[in-house]
Image (cartoon, rainbow, N blue to C red; front, side, top):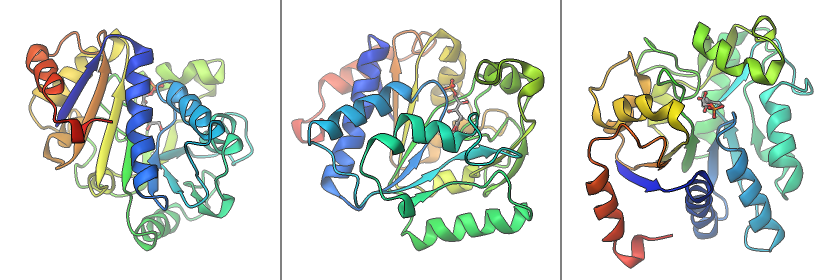
Length: 260
Ligand code: F6R
């Protein structure tokens, strides 16, 4: 795992956006896996800026989002689909037909999840998956105790995630209890995982994920087994990492051709 520590949130977001820009510039028909939540908002805004400057063309890009709340339709203002429309899709030249999302209103959820997996395969697999991390170590909404081989399916949120996401809904009681999420196994099949974590609240999960034992108790820890995983953190989220000096050393000595 490559661990990049940037002093500020803004610099961590910039590094992440640059990695995504490089991917799309190298392969215009890139298949992106995308995350929602507070963490990627700044990254999406940087990507929109790059698009406006003519540096990024999304016309051939396809996307698959990680997750959606069960019971919210795409037009619901709190749905993740609406979130993506507001922060990215509505602001760049992405083709609507290339946007893929779990359907929170699916009547046959298992069949819908199997189709989502099939759509990912048909698109040729995900080239670059943007991830955030929950305080308890979830990726997507694969909460602690999720099978590390899981596929896209329905999951029940933990009380901590409900609490953390209440800010988007205006109260814990309004947060749906269920989500459809790509599985840990689904995420592990993507060619490059790019996880951005910022703020002190993520420090413990980040340290356990990168330096702790691989365990379903912290699903993100499986990323230690991913052949191409980049973790970008700001100084606050890096606070509990033991080998910070070494990670800085590796970054500072990176060959030029590996830099973004
Ligand atoms: C959302 C997702 C989640 C979030 C995580 C962190 O699509 O996949 O795993 O990345 O809950 O959320 P924030 O960024 O709001 O702290």
